[in-house]
Image 1 (cartoon, helix red, strand yellow):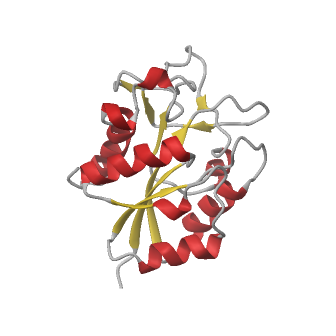
Image 2: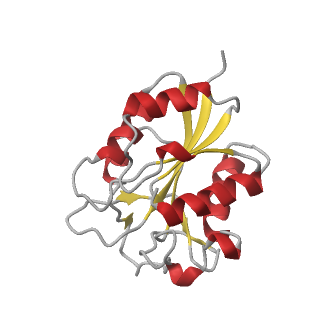
Amino acid sequence: MRKKQLIIITDGDQIARKTIEKVGAKLHLRTISASGGNPTVLPVEEVKREIAEAGEELLLVMVDDAGARGKGPGERVLEALCQDKRFSVLGVVAVASNTDGVAGVPVAFSVTREGKIHHGPVDKEGKPEPEGHLRVKGDTVDVLNRLPVPLIVGIGDIGKMAHADDEEQGAKVTTRAIREILRFHGLNP
């Protein structure tokens, strides 16, 4: 049996869910909507079951800590999915937030709110961080420092970014981030 391939997005509130579902529809990818929430409310084993029972092989999964510092429910799900041998995590879209007291995570690159690639982190508004800043800081990203994820792409907070990533506007920032993860693996976005 082939492994389910996952792209995980570290946001899951109502606005993010609509945006991610829009991206899934645009790119013909199944979104595990039940993993959304602010915070993620579905227990780890239920998220795994939803993924395992999905007919599709490549899936978008949301995780969210609702602004909590430390390892919250979204990070627990993220960690469990990365460690489960039945799944292959292709990459993570690391969403920036204004959470204080977090380490943040280094990113391969970010997608700005204009939809451009930036070789560094962005802030919650999707603006490039000043030189010398190396990490996207968000409430659901610190656990990534200990996980073997092949590609981490930073973006601003879904639903913020001066509405540049809104579902009604075509969700261009999240779409670009997910397309870049697919391209990295040689998959046709």
